[in-house]
Length: 323
Image (cartoon, rainbow, N blue to C red; front, side, top):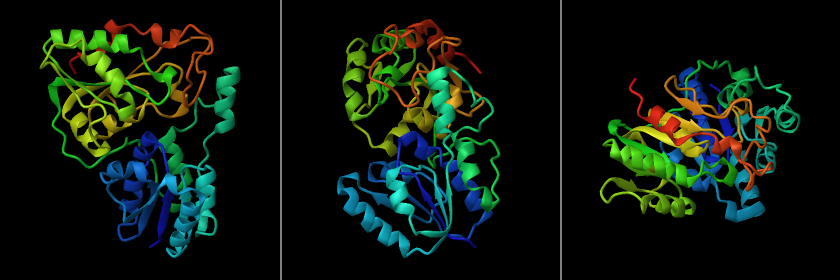
């Protein structure tokens, strides 16, 4: 049985999206050692990922010295296969001399650049991020069955609770907070309880929304929970309204219905949820989309139409739609 090492340091969504590959590898090689290297900040979410034998965490604060020390530890693992699912400088340093067989993810960086810069779509038939993970592991004989991400928690999807995740790491991937506020008010008026989610950095936007809501009609979890606790709370909601962010992938992985708002990014980048009941709201045919793959702190065209033209009524309609 082969020993396998997966390298994926960040970010939150990408780490969650490794779970279909991990499950497939464990199913094919039930007795194998399947290890993961990730960043320490994601420890609590990794604890919900089944199928791993061991996990090593890299602390960004340790810098190059920590990276080299971790590589020395990994070299003792004598891995047969190393799958670099990240392919950044840190993983290039880590993977050096680690295993007999090395496979590196094809991120389609050039095709992505063509789509952003010239709107030439060479990604139309490319696999999504999960599919790219399976490409990287092709030599191990595992096949992508189309399954989405999965985290190991017991979910209790309460149809009367709707989660809202108004944040994202970059400004232009955030639907305006005022719009989220309008949606929250209307949902509460219709009898729903609203749960606000986000990181410590997103606590302010959650509080701006919360201060306009009636007391007792919402729970503001932003900045108060670990990633594992966020996953459990989102799993208790019937649906989530979210930007293109890591919490979108967590929600899919715990089986919560996703209403995702895509502004400057597009599905061709590979992050669209796979769940059949997931909905992506976007302004199709806009000449300037996509303008970025990861996010920007401004709108290059200064009109922000990709977000401003998504009406809050449309979001409410999708969030309250009965299956």
